[in-house]
Length: 339
Image 1 (cartoon, helix red, strand yellow):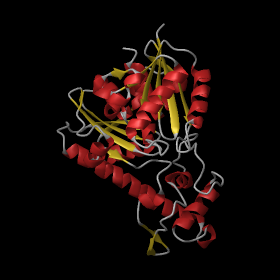
Image 2 (cartoon, one colour):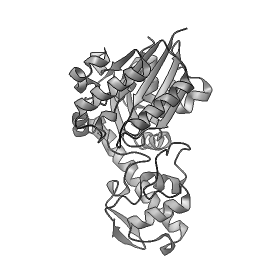
Image 3 (cartoon, one colour):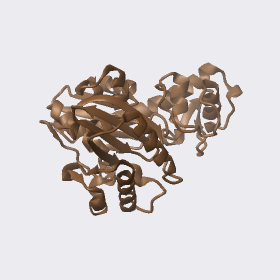
Image 4 (tube, rainbow, N blue to C red):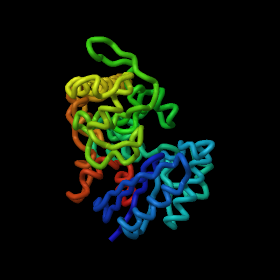
């Protein structure tokens, strides 16, 4: 039996997937914020190794090179590649079209390695779908990648290029700041400007609406208080310069709906931009990945597209299916590297 583990080292989460003869059998995710150093990542890798067991091959992709811990993307790629080699033994680093790189060569290829996890997802989808649009909505970012005639045809590759092309959005279901989603909100019959402080995140919005999937909000809240609907209302109220008792629950739900709609519109607009640059057949199939699958289904409806889950394109055990969709890059890497 051939066993491959795909690792996705992010700035705040570690995700890993185990594939046995290309069948995904287990997927794990841990909080591992790199902003204050690599110790949380080391602890997360240790826990993941216990959960996933040994493997014939370890392959790594990353976005954590962007963390404040590192002075540059090149330094971050080099450091994380060496850390992975030290903790996992023999590893290979995914470098997109450049293939797999040995850790000692990572710095020379940092531009191909940095934030290439989206490319692994798109490459696997291109093997399964002739035409598709990948939308991966995670805790922090959204990837929008077109696939035409079985090939990934993104206009950008680096973060800078993808941001310019609208293929990368810093919009997520959990960690995005509310004031980055909209600059005002309707409240008591008037437009109210927002306080430009990180008093609340989109996790609070989706928690109030009941659209936050379980077990995806792994980081502390903006104020360090509880992850309850009441506490989320209090945090959201502060964004409007108010307190939760200043309005009833229905009013705060309407405010939360406003921000959720603003988020949905932003992703819809970006998808339309990406679609406008490529000739995809109509209707296009959207492949939904990440923790925002329900929201992506709504976006697909608005764009008159069919929608399938990323996990539906893979051979995944039933108990790992939900996690496989949420942790798509690590799954894609494990499957691709089993070929």
